Length: 318
Image 1 (cartoon, rainbow, N blue to C red):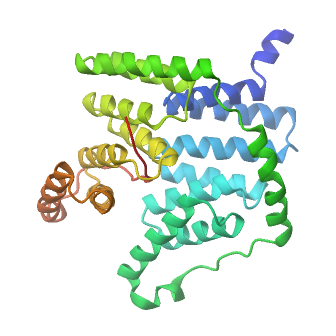
Image 2: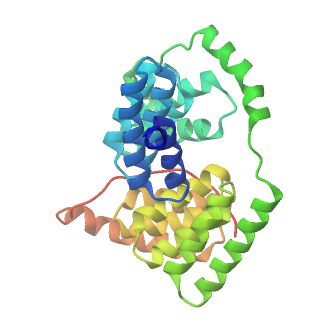
């Protein structure tokens, strides 16, 4: 009985969710994070810090699945439990941006920058929102913003003290895990050449489980997901690659391909333009951008098909 209880403890469920998330199985990750939340409420409801983390983790899974509404709800709960949680702010900003709620996204990105001015994703997000809001509202766009909360000095000091400890505790991948991850990735590459995309995706998943800080494994698996018609999963993998390597050409191009198939024209064009700012001579991106821009007016005049939501991020390699 004790063994069974241990197997279903909230922490065990959380770790299972983390493994599914790393493997790109976001539906399963969501399910296990939900079970962990229930168990923690039963065993220790006053453990607000871990509850906040669990809701933030589930928000990340929802975001990968394109469920921006549920992502925002979980981020709100996480931030009520532990205000100024950087990951929850970034995830809520991403969900708001995907839903074209640019003012709220801007506020969250700017709040993150008060907490840590070195977070590239927040800088990039704030710049994108500035551009989008200027186009939508004109020069006076700032007058329509919600109030940006002021982060208390005590919170900033606490984060600055925690940062060195977190860096010291950061688990570098072992040489053996890195070697194994590389070998699995090469096996996946060989399977792609044979057109065996499902088997290749499995190899890349195993590689990611060994070492989840290698952008190429994510962009390669995204290629497989595109071939398999799993466009949402391809977006999620490109997001992961871009989070690791901010201007990853392959991730931007493959995410644009996925967004095109998902009929998310705005996001597709955005990724292609971002890619072309880095690599103006990329003929494939130029061609796709021309095609999408030609089709855009037709899609706007036709009745909109049943559709999805958006996403974002950025990065590169193979």
